[in-house]
Amino acid sequence: MRLSDFDKAPENEITETHQTNETSSESQVDSMTVNVETAVLPATTIENGATPSGSFGVLKNRNFVILWSGQIFSQLADKVNLVLMIAIIESQFQSENQSISGWVSAITIANTIPAVLFGSLAGVYVDRWHKKDVLVITNILRGLLLLSLPFLLWLTKGQVVANLPFGFEILLVVTFLVSALGQFFGPAEQSAISMIVDKPNLLSANSLYTTTAMGSLIVGFAIGDPILALADSLGASVGLGVNIGKELLVGASYALAGIVLLMLRTGETKQLPTGDEPHVLADLKDGVRYLGENKQIKGALIQLVILQSIIASMTIVAVRMAELLPEIKASQFGFLLAAGGVGMALGALGLSYVGDKLNRAQLSLYGSIGVACSLVGLSFSQSLWLSLLCLTGMGVFSASVAIPSQTTIQSETPEEMRGKVFGLQNNAVNIALSLPLALTGLAETAIGVPAVLIGLATISAVGGIFTQKYNSVD
Image (tube, rainbow, N blue to C red):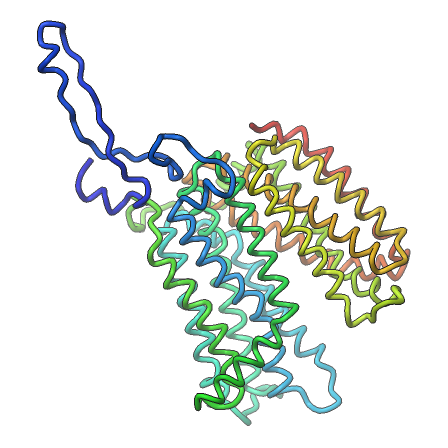
């Protein structure tokens, strides 16, 4: 190994090993010499040569801890960002007695379009670029966009273009760009996990990732507004001005994620693009072909798409459920969604400790059936506490589907295909999130909440059973 290779190997993977050279019996004494070499061992290998399992083992991996820390700041910024945009609309653009729905819909569309346009193509480019560079640059750029927002809104205050406040149009552009950068961050992050975590610990790594993702979701939607209000108060108290602190908080969170990820070492050896690479559409077709040929990855992806469709549908159903339950108001539907998030976080945390000892295919099947049973129970519920219990159970079982499926995709996809596969996965999941938002409301109006829940339960159970023919892993 060349000395320059030390910069390419993750720091926690560099150890010293001793090799004993044996020769003929006549020169046995001379043969007992020791050569010191640098060996690259699995990312979680420790001094006694054992590979620890569970969350304890993966947390011994310094590079995973760095990537995980960056994810925490980035995920939190992602979840609070929508709350930030709504807060800016309320304070600067919404007129008195005017509905905010139109403004929020425009922001939501600007946030969704990049996922449809760039989801797959981003994965192709991620395969050609250094993953660490993508992780750092996308977070730094998103941070700079948010940090520049107060100045841009001040600069365009009072200006109108095409019958819309120019500042709101700036808000749409910033939202679009932040979302577009996120399409590159996702595949790069998933690829990096596969590079720095060895296969026995992938499930634990994904469990911890899901735990923090759910935690940031709960924090973002449950206490995002008071956090942003506190940031504004602190900003005003130190002389930054009114209604500026919240943009600085979200922008700083993205930027801090990028700074943390600067310490990441992925061991990549790829050269920079030379311009001789195949056309991006050819690479995209290559990714689609690979998905079609690999049954394990196809089955895992189908399960993720089904699960995400059900979760998206539940965000619509939850509003109507809250309206029907006597204990809460329709505007308090967030309590129901938070229960599902808590359940998924608990399920992910449990899998981080024991999941590596279980069969991933069986976990996915039992999880799909468990989701179905939770939805059936929910369809008969007429009390808040039973509904919260069923939704928490649905979250736990959802983790048993999502985490093993994601782990299968990571472990079974070769390095040169990861960006393409993860990009296609992001595209499929984004479509799975979009279609139910349009269809579930119509279905609920036509056949009612219980029938919709029974339908979703049937989809979950049938999907879990159907994909077992693909999921013969481990």
